[in-house]
Length: 218
Image (tube, rainbow, N blue to C red; front, side, top):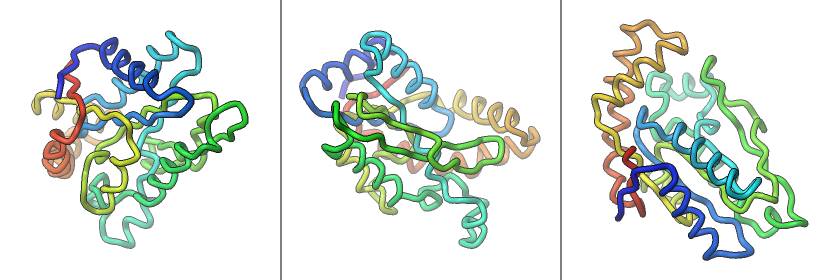
């Protein structure tokens, strides 16, 4: 496993994988713990790839597959939102499978739709993301891409290339606290959630790091 230290090196690695699979779409997974910077890195990588080749890469965040809050309340899991069993894993796998179907890529392909996520209300937004057939690379980012429990074991086999984002815990915690405050939590509640629920999830996620093809350390 190599460690990559720049957006350029990550994008170059992805481009090489795409070039090795001409005529087909590849799925690239960027995993990591809450606050590690997955979303920022994935956005930057997609932008870099698209500057090199217009409309080469699309982005699919895992957040859109959070179960609705009402459903989490029914299941008694609202206070653990973000844990492995609080996502629509079958729905996520279904979209990944659709993206790799022959009918979804190429000049005669059809678009695939996926949910987005509104952090201000912490709810999924149906069909907020459209991935057209022109994209040869789909960058998938999320916490549990490399997990092998709670149904997540079906995800990794759909990914052609995987990365794990590494970041010191103290920096992750501060980023998480700031993010929770930015989206409406009090500083006290943000700290409790970041050091409690988020950190328990992080322990599970960090244990999957060794399954990635590469580590990202920016």
